[in-house]
Image (cartoon, rainbow, N blue to C red; front, side):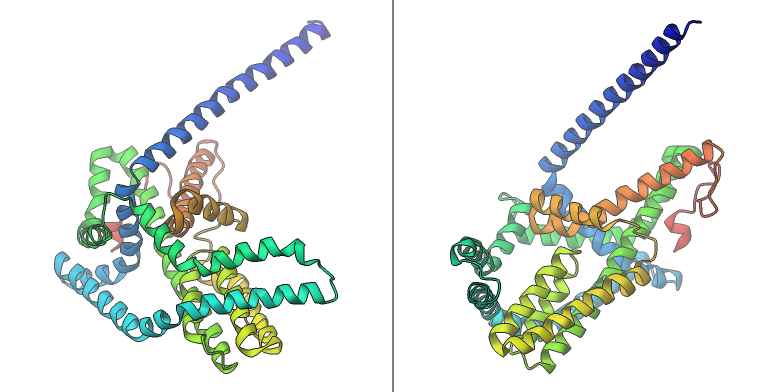
Length: 378
């Protein structure tokens, strides 16, 4: 075979491979578009299901504990839900009056803090002209002052105009009850329907996703609570008048990775700047930065371990995409959704490695021994 024929064969093979992958990419992109369209048009149904699953992952361990000690499924689910509501009601009764009464003060303080930063930039050593920052500061001020309205409208818009908030809350509660009561029967049913092979793989994959989501939500709650307590105590020591509502904002902001921590920390510093001055604001900034470093380098890796295994860029892009498409609830659900997709891809790669004869030391069970269902793990 001549060198020219050999080159033609190689080039032809390269174009053939490129053509195959081009068609595959187009098909995958079309499938992603169709999936996004379906999710967007069924969001009013998927939203309560997703929220109920998130709540159920947190409450399922105590339900499983009660079930293992002889409690009936329904009684165990009801007892845990009532205990959860009692705890939440007690916290709301203690915190809500202070937060509701000072929400406007927080927004006004942050706005005034931005104004002080602007004046310092204009008159300080950086010599920034007033015209360069006026438009940006005004936009941020309007954003902060309207934050409560925007948050509320974001929540309502994701639920849908035709469905009331009360109906969705009731639906989420009912679904959460059924997920906790009968959820342990779902995977055995999937195994029986799908058979030993397909059903076994689905059982293993869904079990991993469930454990990943539950671990993420529980760890994120602990991390957010620790952040809120430390920052709140720091603000109380600095005698910041709005320490309690800022701590509450920090707690809820912890459920939106990266973005939530940045926004809540900035609010704390700006409010401290207005109420206590520059020195205390710098101390508050040091506290916020130290807490965020503690969270990023110690708390999150220790509590979440390798269950998430998501790069910070993936988390940030997920939060951005979720918030742009579905508002506040989309930002909250973006990281759990990304974690579920990542867990699916990891499971598929494990199976590919096994088929190829490459078996990592930490790989899951072999192909003919899928993992135990949740019912056996409870």
